[in-house]
Image 1 (cartoon, rainbow over the protein chains, first blue to last red):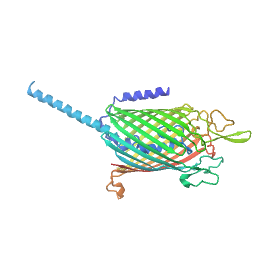
Image 2: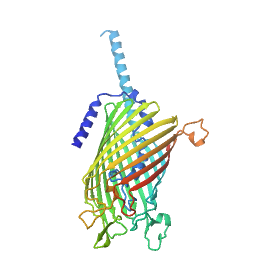
Image 3: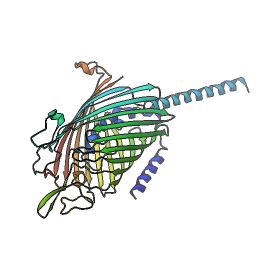
Image 4: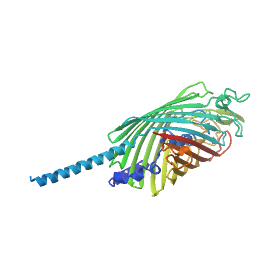
Length: 70
Length: 399
């Protein structure tokens, strides 16, 4: 059911692809404050410390063992 | 055909050719801009919590475009745990294992083991433009005294609808080796993750992103430094945790990024997670970014996570069971995180600070306050709440 809802959302979004923004209208979208994960290395650092503290994060890169640290 | 009509037709063809050249040029520039640019980034990060854990993890990464369509990224990160409460049989949050990172060879006390908790992570990645798509391949190797991990990450992103939409397919494959210092065995852990992500520019001020993840974890999935205390006939005994050796994890998420003024944007996100260990989680996030001036961006973010517990997690066990754990990450609870970000970009030639004059330099400051509450107290210190701070100072040099 949840998977179906997700794919319905994707289908709805694909339909919205009919509405296109022209290249010359995208100036604002290239602004750093409009880029999702503008700095992926920085985003990875944030994710890194959540990986060891929540059971619902992770599996996006190298893991480590040891103490798990909390 | 009269001469005048021929000239008019030639004019129209010329205009069409010019339009196509202009269009495809913009299109190519648009795709090329998606390739990582030349940059060197150095980050000094630290994590500190009230469970007596302190971790320093500096990293350096270098990205270089080696051709018009290819760039290579290398990264090195080191984790140094300077104090860690790994195992304690007391009810007080004492540090009972002092790492060699802080003792430099000392044994940390009369009867306390020394743990060499330094982890090195190496990453080499490559991004290549293929038509109107980007292929990225990354290899990671992480090594520490009791764990090694080799990871391959591959992603292909296809852009379409005049670059207004993209579909990304990704795979992550990890081969891990676990060999705790307190054990005489070595076991495997394997992870396969598949990602399917979709991004859509809805308008010139709004972007939608849909993300989905499927992960298969198998092998040794427990942390064998976390023991399970069980009282049998009045005698306390410690048992190794036993987790199922297969865990299927799924997540679906969306985020919306909206520019609501010339100088500010808001990103809202929601993620639903469910796995074969019966953990369900709802994660909400909101991030606000605003230009304080042409060269300064302030970011404020909030993230809340609510989760249920794994089917075999119990606050305490009265007898050994098929599956048992004290891993607090598998307990029900919630967490909140407040993020503060400040980005100073160079290029301000009027600034009296010389390091802000160079437009190729960017300074990044991140401060995260994290609070996690679990329904049951952690097994070794009897605490339900974890308060942590994560700090990062980064310098990004683009050239």
